[in-house]
Length: 104
Image (tube, rainbow, N blue to C red; front, side, top):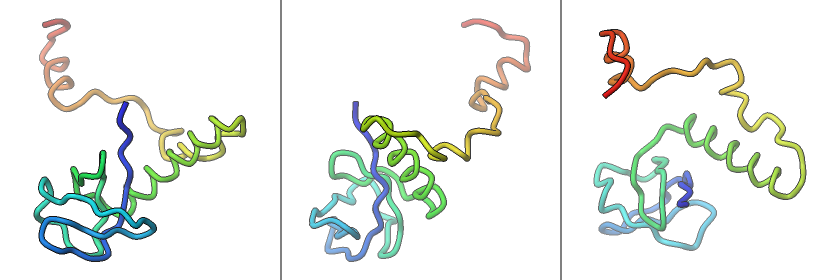
């Protein structure tokens, strides 16, 4: 499994970016619109998506909660944003369901 990490860009040189709290460079080939100060979701050293600061905070909290559980500690409020949420189908599946389709 590959886990995405939210990182904030601090400098860009060509298609490589320096990020806060890391000495590693990340590849921006898939996110050419990314700018200094943006948050990006990275997988295996490559930015895959520019995300909001709010989304970065939620992802970071979830990863911290998982880290805590793996160390035998409590989950805490790592998934507080999901506690009150009800499950929802993706838009394309909701449209099919609304149209009466229940399979294939």
